[in-house]
Amino acid sequence: MAFSPRLELRQGQSLVLTPQLQQAIKLLQLSNMELGAYVENELERNPLLEKADENETANLRDEENEPGEAPAENTSDGTSDTELKFSEAETGSVAEDILDTDFDNVYSDESRAEAIERQTPPAPATSDWATMKASGSSGSSGSGSPGDFSFESTLSRDITLVDHLNEQLNMTFHDPAQRMIGLHLIDMVDESGYLAGKLENVALRLGTSLEKVEATLKEMQRFDPCGIMARNLAECLALQLAEKDRLDPAMQALLDNIELLAKHDLATLRQLCGIDSEDLSDMIAEIRSLNPKPGLAFGSIVVHPVVPDVFVRSAPDGGWHVELNSGTLPKVLVNNVYYSKVSKTATAADDKEYLSQCFADANWLVKSLDQRARTILKVSREIVRQQDAFFAYGVQHLRPLNLKIIADAISMHESTVSRVTSNKYMATPRGVFELKYFFTSAIASALGGDAHSAEAVRHRIKALVNDETAQTVLSDDKIVECLRDSGIEIARRTVAKYRESMKIPSSVQRRREKKSRLNEEFSK
Image (cartoon, rainbow, N blue to C red; front, side, top):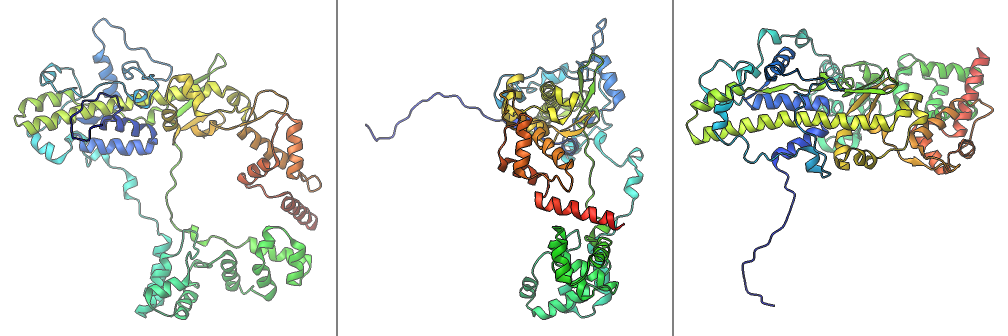
């Protein structure tokens, strides 16, 4: 074997993800809110993109139909064939699932711009496209017009918990050192109003004594709302009871053993507190009237409602009609007339290259959005077909399903199906579900029939627990027997795992809770 340097020619095949293909893959896994933000950013960056109104889209469809040609027919998902004009990719690999078009040389010929004469929305009123290039946005995609005004932009900001505590801090402390300690303590308060962290770390960080930090905290625990800046639940309740002058030794003993109250071990609590059942009931009622999370009374993070991406409705023939939520689909157009106009005035090589790149990116984005909509609809239809019994009869008829079953049925890759089902929601007659909800593992059947879905087994366990009484509380072993009698082969540890995932207490704790409720009803 020769070890001297030499030249060799090798031929091989490899899959290369171009930036355009990476963009298409990224769009698949974005939620509708993330997609809207991404498209808005592209509208600002690319001067050849602009939003399409419903009327403009309708006019564009009419103009694209040749004279004497029938209008495009609507598909079952409510979109026209003109809008969905790109072929579906079903070749099996991740890249070919998304897009199957070579864009290496697309729109590179200047003669292509001369041939574009279709009627599209009017071009921005500007003659200097170099200014447009420098700004990175066109006049049509800008904001600030009178029609963009909304009353929501004039709403005042909610007062947050941090702002409320800072105001009280400035009015309470005049010593700069205490103010500095107070600011650090406020930074440690979570949204529920509890102090998350150790005081020793604050003293070490600020170079002060632990006693001074504790004294500052004790003073700040008198702030409004009552119970704020407590280090645990017992301290939070104690601060509120002390404000009401109800923190006697018996109540303090109850708070010191509050975990027994959560377990409904009332007999042990009576012994520790040295009181009878009637006094204990009064103390528990008083604790229930307190606020365990005082910080939640102030402004917090806005929770956005779930907007479904797909609608499922019952069809007259007994099947199911699946359609996309058009309100979540960004509607963008490529301004071909504007591109044709400015491409004639561009003389520098850099200007031509920039304009050609913007035009290619704009067309690729429109195609990627179209393919994303097609893929979501295709996966959703197959999910509905596989889970037909769930939509007709309920969660107890949910079938075991995995990504491979869907991928094989629609000739796509499993990773593509995984991206499509991430952060996507389906509105059905039985509620709104994430697409991932319909994928569950299989539980073997004790009778040798079809396997049962794990979600259906969880529903069965929850139903058994809800039907319990104080005298008929089921242990995990008893639940296993009940499930086997109904044809579900399952282990006791699996039942315990499912029960804990649904926040269902153990049989001992459930028995205490039910007996406690009975005692309360009898006392009334």
